[in-house]
Every structure is written in C-alpha cells, then in structure tokens.
Image 1 (cartoon, helix red, strand yellow):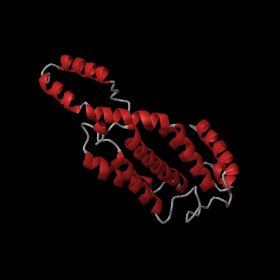
Image 2: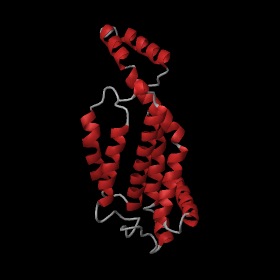
Image 3: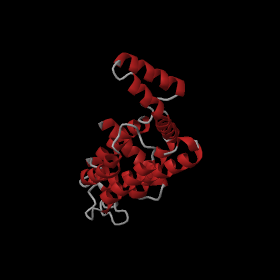
Image 4: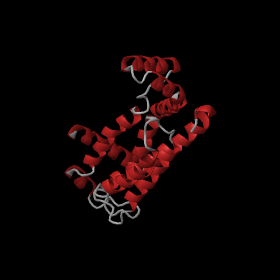
Length: 213
C-alpha cells in the first residue's frame, strides 16, 4: 500500500499545482477526476441494479417452485439471469475500485511525507489541518447525510433490509469516520455528492421507467 500512497501524493501535488495551490481544492479535483473516470462503471452498476429489481417477480416464482431442489433452483436462476442480461454482481465494481483509492488517500494524508509537504498550508474552509480529524465533527455528519442521499437514490436491492441500509449504515459510518483525517473526510463527502448527482442523472435519463424503484 505504501507505493500506492506515494503515487497518491504525487497526484495530489499535480492537482495542487493546477487547481488553486490548496490541498483542499486538490482533494476535491482528485475526487471529481476519480468519479468521472469511473462513471461508465457507475452507469453499468446502476443499470444492473435496476435490472435485478425488474426480474424479482420472476426470480421469486423460481425460488418458490424449486425451493426443495437446490441444484435445479441454481440452474433456473442462472438461466433467468442470462436470458434477462442480468449480472447479480454487476453493482459492485465501482465500489471495489474506489476502495484502494480511498485507502491510498487515507494513508497518504497520514504519512510523514504529507506532513512535510504541507507544512502550515493545509487548511481549507474551517478545516485547520487536512491531515488531522475535523475538530467540529461537521465533516463526519456530512458524510452520513450524503451517504443517506446516495442510498436513497439507488434502486432497492432484493434480499436487503432497506431500514438498515438507509439509517443504520450512515450512522455507523459517521461514527467510524470521526477519527479520519479531514482530507479523507472531505474526499468522502465530495465523492458521495458526485455519486448522488450521477445517480440522479442515470435514474432520470438512462434507466427505463419500468425499472425504476
């Protein structure tokens, strides 16, 4: 992970030099670039999630019909997915790709190299030091709120407890993110906002009306 963290620092330097000579702005531009690069995968993910929702009535019938025949059930489910062009794991790819980038930024902003690099120039808005947690805890709360928005705009997934996803998870994430560097918190908030905007666009333009929640 050290090599990826070092690459992240170099990328931040580039965005710092072209994006306003401020590391808060550099993190925002980095976040925008990452989410724009992953947009094709985000689009495919949303399409697959909506398709999974569409085939649920047929899937439920198959599950009821072959509940005592596991092998037959598995085959019928796979045949249904194939005929409908559905990939049950298709909604996971953007998240999986974002995880290493998130971890790289997390470790980069806590590295000695970043502390030397920023000196006293790491403040952004009310955040006095992007390498340290937000002392006001505003950013963790914003993470929770923006996560709730992104969850709300996504197609509901079968077999999930929406109450847990919609409310418990954002609260849990707020608590977990409190000790994170505020630069990472900023990345998370902006990433959530961009994801929400992309989902609104995809749901309104790219998803057929019959497949929407």
